[in-house]
Length: 310
Image (cartoon, rainbow, N blue to C red; front, side, top):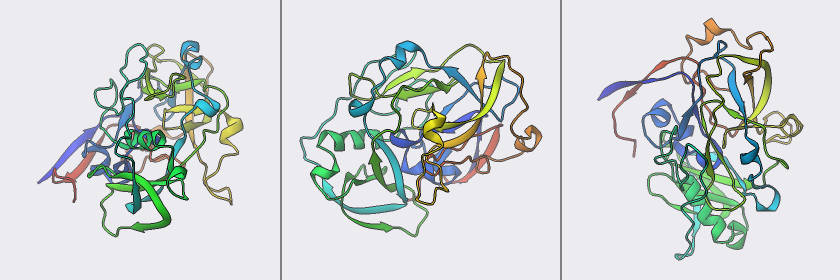
């Protein structure tokens, strides 16, 4: 059955532990499957091609888990792939709740969180792995597999990975690493729900990133975005973080941004009229692990069938 769905301006896809294998697929996977978490930004500012940013409150920054207390970051290494997995101990469980900030709820997935559409079990899978001691406690790798359809979750027993030839993005193989930041970030996306690791542990806390209507947005600049929050990474980290040895693929996305309630004038970073005609698929911006389609204007996503591919 053919159909279509309108995707409003300001949508973005979450990355890292709050993403899903389906977020790496086509428009149907990302916007129709219901299993690719996505959020929205405020759209009151003039330059829609710049992502509006709010200051992260001191009360949130003071509870941001850093260093050895911070959970590892998750990167997708192989799309449409699986590996031979070592099953997790049957008694492995995770805390499904965590402290909550004003205006949003926090659970082990994106279900029922204000401002987040789509649900994935990737975060819960990874927290089960960490609760079991991490992959190094069971295998010689730090790779794990997660399948959104079957909920299969486990550490890869070897470096051998199989990539399927079909266009089924239900499964992916991931790696994890320690966070690169040593201090709490300063900015989040205006109007979005930001996830951050709390010093108390457990599931990430959901914070409603709000700072008024943000009709005035100035101090435009290219800044590095970590879409697992999403939040802005300091330039001192973003400029030196790469996914490859040749330093051609940035680990964090360099995106055009502006600061809410900042009156400093600047020229719009991209041509607005050109962007208004672009599709969601063509409005991609940069970092290799982000999967963060950014929709600059309302688009019509065409799809065939309502049932996900098997």
